[in-house]
Length: 270
Image (cartoon, rainbow, N blue to C red):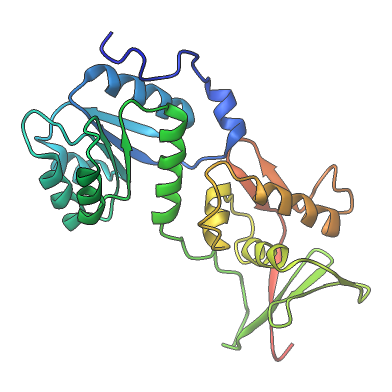
């Protein structure tokens, strides 16, 4: 087989990957003249939760990216019909799309040129699928545009929101304080406060770990970083009646977290 020795022998099933991260569906295009590499990369990415299309030549790539709303292109520079660097330039000039170069050419000069032209990352062959997946997640996380918060009902008037009330808690976004209904002030780290604010500004909406990392501006975290899980666990200890059976910050299996509560914005007049 032409790609033998390039990949790990032992396959990594979907359950294992789902446990390693809650990944929102993204559309990925793999362009490589080796059908074996295309198929194996496709299988790994699909098992991880992505929508994947493969192509074995450069012709038609521009149209595919436009028609299929592609988020990320994994591109082999050594294509039989077009120059890979030229194709990459066309893609980056016309679309807001992530691009990872996957190439058997090991010259440092080519890697530098590819990154200078606009590639988001470069991975040489042979490569390990775990590393490719980590780079895919990292690029998508960096490029993901943050969706606006789900509006909460502020009632009449246009006063600036200074905090949020939910369940038996009040979060003051000005002083970064969390206050209980009995007036008790709960001590939280700055990271936990920021994460809680992200959640209360988007109530009853599922947010993946990657989305949460983007929203708290933790873009430098490793691809398999578990800091979000740690912060969620600490928040639960602070605000849940029973952290072992959370009612406010709930886990949605294989998708992310959700603040399951009615949130009322607090204005200065209140």
